[in-house]
Length: 203
Ligand SMILES: [Fe+2]
Figure 1 (cartoon, protein in one colour):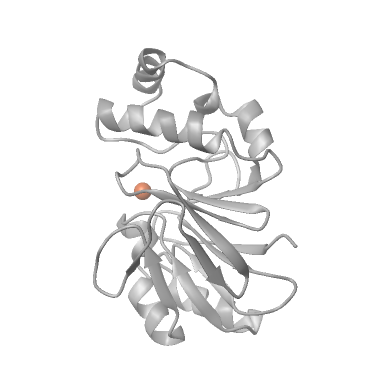
Figure 2 (tube, rainbow, N blue to C red):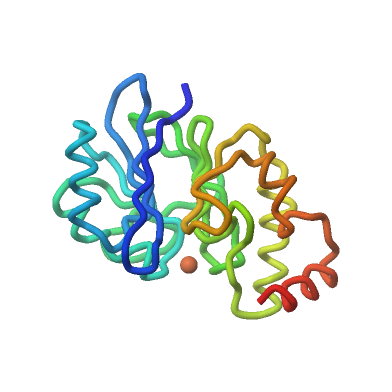
């Protein structure tokens, strides 16, 4: 049964936090607790389910600003793709057994070297790797090429009916992967050289 998702648009830089749960029951998860801790905690309370886990897509401040406060208030376990205090480090292909159902970790380096996406039943949380109508920024050409592989090889191969929930609203709060493949120029097939030229023009 696909996860249900409620997105909070935080006020720091309009970054998204996604509260998700299974309609079948059980505890919820929260992806990328951003700056608006009080609103995020109110959202958990309004849902009426415990928060089992906090999932971090990457370590940028706008996506992690609320981690400590939300974890303290809820006792949720914090999962993220790097080794840090209070973080249970995840790796590519790992499957987290959570009350909302299995959540798969998919490494998608590029925006940051450690960036990951999380795939739950019917949904994919992409952080700053893939937006509805854009992709994340990168610091250099090597990172751009890593991002191209993450987009064109790793994510493009996933089922088109997955609903994508990105970390920011560039073109929408969510869309199916098929809609994104059709409408997002970052997903258009390109060689490495073509992708680098496209990226320079875009940024
Ligand atoms: Fe970021």
